[in-house]
Length: 146
Image (cartoon, rainbow, N blue to C red; front, side, top):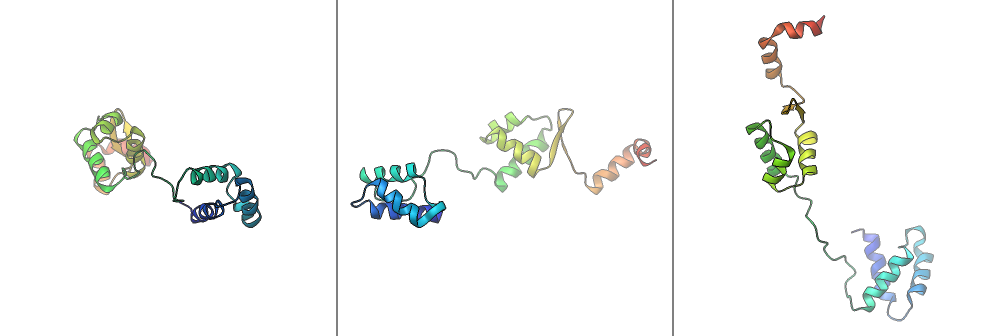
């Protein structure tokens, strides 16, 4: 939470002890200027304090925490792809219990894979892979060199 917002909420809580919300907004607008909370936000916080709220910090919100993209998830996803190059993002998402968007982000941005002919292929070849391709069929690479 922004410290400026929390400071303004504390001021609202302090001033709420006898002033109306419209007067609090006017006083805060004079002092804070452009950085002042919106009028409706000040009114809402006044209602919260009037209803008995004692803290000016946000309550935790529902939803999944953003700790899905960690080293363990990335390595697990990489291992699933290496085991089955034809695995889909949906299958990975179900297996790891994460969203398909997160799977897509990890595959393309963090692991550097692309789907080619229904198989996951690394976008960047290592020197060993380049040499192995050259040794496999040098005639196909010759046409690109000339």
